[in-house]
Image (tube, rainbow, N blue to C red; front, side):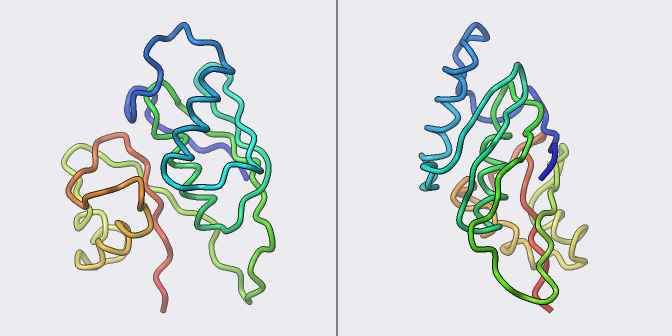
Length: 154
């Protein structure tokens, strides 16, 4: 749980005008999350100016992280306040890291990011797969986009 920052003027352009009411924006974000195949039946979305508040529950940590970046990578959104709870969290010792995020900078590409975070550019596909279905092509990322960076299995 916590507040995750995003680049406000980068991402999918869901809001055709700035004058949309907060509830209309929340409905558009829910539809955007659903578009990627995530179950939103237990997720509540509120929009307060440039902040999205996610509440409720979701099935896995992986899907939680993907829903957060899906909601945050929207033009006009600067932060996501994460209040999502994972249903039936996995019982493992130690628990996996809940999240690690990376904000794409100008000139970045997935293998460059993989080299920076994993020390191996060939591990770019791990980042790509962790961000599907939002990413459809490993070559199509943009500055300001926030990506989930999963831990490496040792």
